[in-house]
Length: 580
Image 1 (spheres, rainbow, N blue to C red):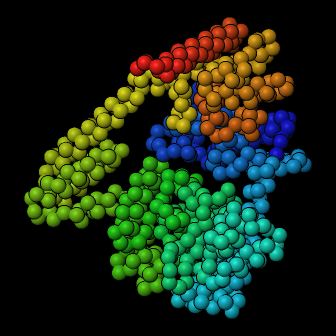
Image 2 (image 1 turned 180 degrees about the vertical axis):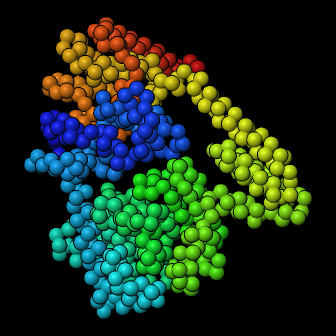
Image 3 (image 1 turned 90 degrees about the vertical axis):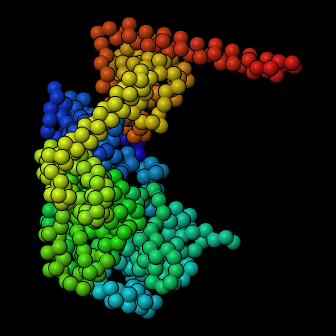
């Protein structure tokens, strides 16, 4: 949707960035007029996420992301630009101008409608004669009708085209079904249903949209579970099964389990804060999503080798977000579903209340690997346990757990404490040395945070950044200047930002994060915000502008000369008798 400058300006004025960001990030520490908090887009312990009430922009000095309030909603809610505008308009009670939606927005809306209709189809099939096998399976797993309705559980018939025919009757095309991952192309042409003879779990996002499906096969065959492929609306690494329900829980924590059936069983037993990742190990994106709804996570993974390994990995991801992490230790059952069936909800509640904090869990896991009655193994245990304790951020934590390790191994507390601090010092020095090596490289300082955006000519790029910064801050400077064309920029990404900025200025519009957001992608907007953080003396803007333009053109000419020399060398190599 092509929104007018006046509408976007009013939208951002009525959605103050501090108010909006505060709904997702705890902003506290101040530096000048800026407010700081822990970045919601990457894991960190020290706040580096800055929000400027004056400029109405955000910028993370850690990961480099930045933009205005619309970009923030796009990133945090995984929305397109028009959808983020709609989100903020609803928040502010503003009507959206009656203009035609852009192509991607229409496509996204259509796909969500298709997924919703597909979910209704699957749910209806559960009550048909063909759904008998699915009902039998649900009875075996003790999934009641009320729970099936709550989750929208359905059945994909054991046919080739039942869903395709039903959706075509509703006006959807085969291409739309294929694009949504609901059908596949046959080897001899035509399409067939992706999900067949499966118990179907719709994946619903926190806004209530059906974004994909997870299907559990009812007979023999592989894979046991099948998820929708990545689509315009579905990214399994950025969503969690049942978070749409768990976010409403009053329990104060979220239970993280491995499978859909575990989640369904937990909710049915009264544990309404259970969620699961979608066929993958927990991802940093999923962890950040969890952190928006809770400050405590209880890991309830399967009680086997793979589950223990996955729990260790999840702990490492969750603790970086300053979340309180606990881990269940189940005995006599392989997973939460089986535990509840064998021992009941009260026993599981007791298990939750006695769950170990992540440090105790990890330390116990290390202990289980060694026989401490054997000296050689005791030494190995002390090495691994000391390394684990050395990585704890708090000095009090390190002291307490160093004493615990000493007690477990029968070694002096002083000895273990010294070993822990020795390893801690080594880790700190390694981290500091790595950072200093990075910072000591001048060319690194001139490069964008995003590794995908590399400057081939950092010197010219610095001038290009300066030119963009000046025009953004004082568009009037463009009136009497002989500005370079975007093609004269050495950096394509800066050339594109400059082109969009020039277009706004040439049309008499005032550049802002809101008006530029629809034309720049997330990386480009983050780069723009980063370069706007650098100081610029506007009182001497005309002179600075001329200097930047001169530098850009000088570097371009130098590059042309080098290119000409290379062309000459290539020509000489082709000359008979010449060898390079």
